[in-house]
Amino acid sequence: MTFKGICSKIAVGIMCILLFSFCFSAIVCAQGPNIDSKASLLMEAETGKVLIENNAHEKLAPASVTKVMTMLLIYEAIDQERIKWDDNVTTSAHAASMGGSQIFLEAEEQQTVRDLTKAIVIASANDAAVAMAEFIAGSEEAFVTMMNNKAKALGMDNTNFVNSCGLDAPGHLTTAFDIALMSRELILKYPEVFKFAQTRLDKITHKTARGAEEFGLTNTNKLIRNYPGTTGLKTGSTSEALYCISATAEKEGMQLIAVVLAAPDPTVRFDSAMKLFDYGYSNFALIAKEESGTAMGEIKIYKGKTELSPVVIKEQTNVLVPKGKHIVIDSEVQLKQSIDAPVTAGQKAGVVIYTHEGQEVGRSELVVPEEIVKASPKDMMDRMFRRWFYRGAERV
Image (cartoon, rainbow, N blue to C red; front, side, top):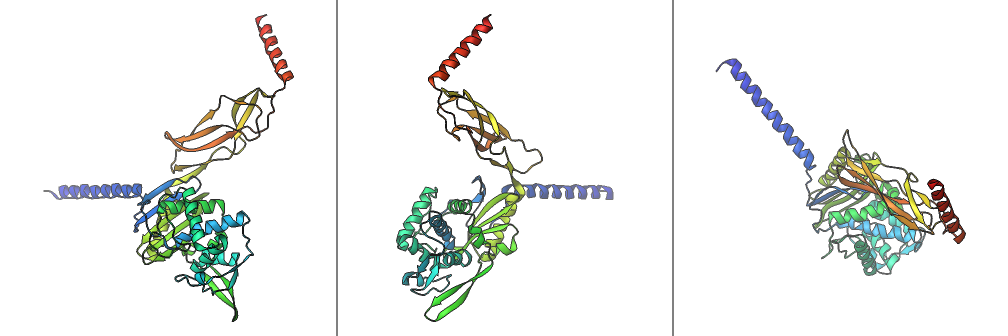
């Protein structure tokens, strides 16, 4: 074989290798990042859509990620004015006996709701979580019942809580998907949790018989230092659960929730969450559709003082789509045939459905913007007369 022929074969071989490498890379990209954990999931917060998952419905021990539910119930109690941030909480002997991550509360020591919540979110304090559980529900057992009831209400079908802090216990199990559900509920309803979740260092003051002693709080979530856009949320680790996290981030107007369960070490846990975030922000985007109040047509009002009413977008919808140069979002307006008067302002009249490549990616509710009263008998007679008159004029 000539030298030229040998070179030609070598060139063909190199091209084949490069082509194989390109195809392999494309397959890996399509499948998403390689996550070294028993379960993982990435969810877009606004739409609740899962972008990628692995064993997301496998029941596993969640460790202190449990406290996402504890935090949710604390913020809910504040919102409903059942407790206040400045309320004093007395630590029970049971709460003070918690091991693991803690702030070393002593029995009968008092701390405010604000400082205990801060210790839960920042430092993952087990004793603070149990103290708050007892303060809200009267006992940790009663609070756990609240946790499980809330889990059912959120559709967390594979979750069973046994305690409020996440220490290993028989039957204390949940899934990556269920964790994403409760994390989404917390950050969408109570985004003020990010104030604590993004705090790197803080402190509380112990108030005991020995006097006042300051105790430092260090955030257990290293992502707030290492991944731009991180907003929270909760880490966890025990001998049974290994290393877990429910992480939240916001970039380009999109909030993502990354859940990693049973990673082999803390570095893998954080690296896995970052890989999930990178995958989400590289491959997906939120596109804003029509603004609130945008007119989308008209609807008949049966026996209303006004016979026709405009229908408008109730709330702007952002639709989640794959990133690409030519993203086309189609929309279809679906209206009721008519609405019976009287009509209240904001009454539902229909929906606009957004689709991408034939798949629904979002919908916005359509409403009547203003109140419409029922037509009086005189209004109806005048309306009938006008119709009769116009029909007669047309015949002439």
